[in-house]
Image (tube, rainbow, N blue to C red; front, side, top):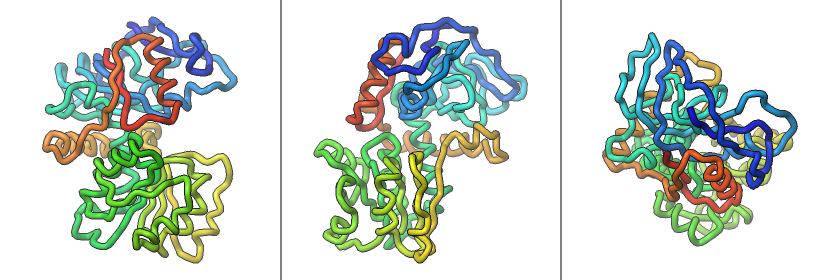
Length: 337
């Protein structure tokens, strides 16, 4: 089958960074479904893995961890899907990605595609929806029922990106006062459209901006950008006994001592954990995506696709990687096959 893969870790503008390759069509493991891929969306994980570093691959490494398509084959123990089902999912970073004609994924981390969305609109959603959902409800421990969050607030750093666009919507539905960070007019407008009540600039100190809005501290902080850069500012404005969650790895050690007097907590969110370690609750990602699909079909959640491109071709993917690395993306970029 045709795919786009890499042998070397190179800058996206290098023609050898992502290449057209031919590989064997995947054979399903017992819990796998094989999907004919119709669309994939890009995420920072794609560019981080492709980024220049030492080492070469003997076999092409295929990226792509956000996909939608049609089930064409099922493993011996599959019970959730059958051939012909339209599905969407984020895959596992421990396996080959979905930038290919066909892709094998464990049924426990896939779900039926929202019927109201086309394949591209659906492919924009899984990874960011899982990250936002797990970060807020599983890691930060936020209640989903709005009546339980009366008077509580959340600060979402990097609100206009893929994860932020979903987190804003979920936080608003959970009844929180939603504070998003943005630094440009277009990102500010997008964040407000997605559910932000208040906007502050992440390039400036948080406290003066919050206090200008009558906010002194926040119950929850969801960091989606530059944990190192924002750490001191987050520790300053989180409430006593509040919680901070981040999805962005750090280059330096964090000073957790800044949280001690407040008895505040810090936790990571990595949406691949359940699939990577095949945790006992791995199927929760299937259930989560089913709920997201239901909300999308009901119109209470909106797809975050903002840009479409077409073609299972290395040149299309190289250009898309460059766009994502430019730091100007709002929402999600999707490639249709």
